[in-house]
Length: 273
Image (tube, rainbow, N blue to C red; front, side, top):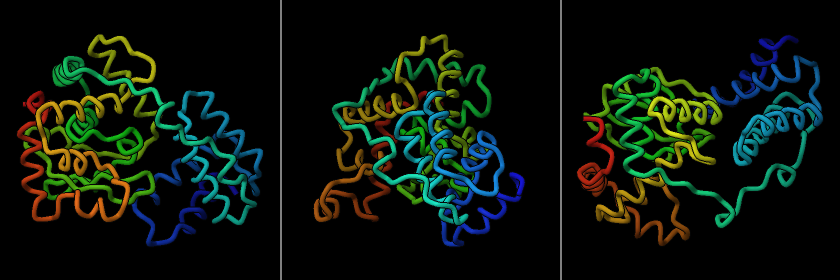
């Protein structure tokens, strides 16, 4: 079989109840895998390891390589190939204290937005608007689809396509997010961030990325005295303990008030006016 035939068979094997994100992003990753190791009747562990090594050598972060590993495990399973590796063989999730967490200052975020509004592409405007207003992680940005923007709301999803949160789209960015979003890779998001920094004549520092904007957003919301429960909801954090999560999270009737407070005190929304 050639690449197109392999991908067609894989797509047909994905359950109909799988999310639109899975049905799109998994074949995309498998397509890159085939491009790297070639179209074969049977794929082995060596093929999978070779591709993961290639991704890491080209700058992919451990958490992203781990996710790609799960995509390949699914691909091998659906195609009837022997499982390439056990979960424990994939790159481990970094411990909280081991993670380097650079935060982009409010002034630097303002420089990025100003540069993009002045001379950036529609793609730059779309992704930077979503990043600065909602604080999406790189993997969440990479999974965005045009269908995630409907009726004046954005749906933020996990890498596997599960909805994490639904938020209103403020008028300040509505024109910029009217864009044909298509799933891509976290690496593509990293490259886009660097291009935006270059447009603003900013020097790129190690480990900086869209997550650096997210961390600055958290600081700005808390500095502006936004209810911490609202920040937790808006940034789509999980709260340990089911009872704690139940009592701490705003209920449905409180969400309009939560979003109103967040947008009133949002540190970056005014930058898009």
